[in-house]
Figure (cartoon, rainbow, N blue to C red):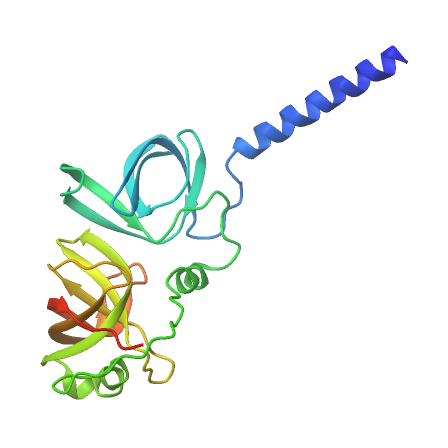
Length: 235
């Protein structure tokens, strides 16, 4: 009986050790475009997780929306956009090169790069009801009239639903106002001005269409170099 108990104990230990090693090993035969990297160092700041990683002996930095990961873990990413000589005001640090990625995960995505990008950037429509500006446009009107509005400066009022600060020397702000055109209800705004998720703001910027920043970041319409001031919500 004692031998049986000892045998089962050893078997359990071997199985546990094997599983632990397996979980720490990077997944083989990764989907096309997926990178497996081991975390050397991490810094959480201003909604981002900055990671120093090692990929097959090549060490570099990447940044992703804040994620709970630890040093020594293997994580996976697909899409990324490299920035040279990027200075983070929050960290007061300049990176010779850093890769901004859409997300990192502890398991590789099973879907394609395009599908993963679509799901990552899929911002849900919020229940919002705002009184439109008399001298401005709604989000729906901007999408519907984007060809004729290209290059013009316009105003729009919206609620901030997503905010990414200090990327390429500008802040990236997604707003909604409750209107939509062909299921297009989220408008990207770039600005030197700051905002917070949940703020209702009035934005005045230049309409740009068919913008492609690479790595899957493309927008049929957006507002650039916008000025921002507070708005009043009417729910």
